[in-house]
Amino acid sequence: MIRRAKTVWRGAGRGGSGNLSIDFGALATTPYSFGTRFESQKGAIPEEPIAAARAGRLTNVIAFQFQGAGYTRTEAVLNCSGSL
Image 1 (tube, rainbow, N blue to C red):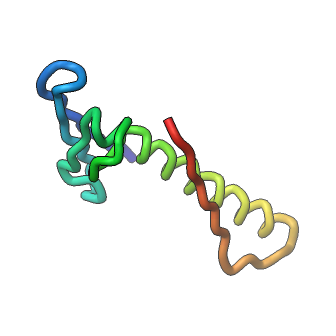
Image 2: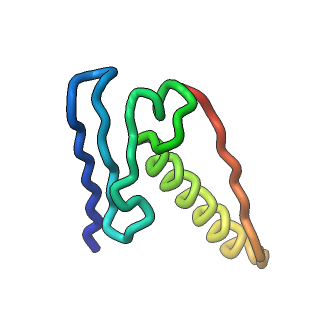
């Protein structure tokens, strides 16, 4: 299975801006910029999909570990937060 992501950045450094997109549409040309990464402007940061992927993978591993040990889990929740 091949998954694709695309990012486009226009301009230079602090004054530039861009868009993030991934194949299945969760991020469909979502804007990002210096302000969305380092200030409180609305938009995305490129690290967000990475954090979501890591959280998803970890909850999946936890579910399989519990199943392998003979337990039935109905839900696994992982809340992540951080700052740059």
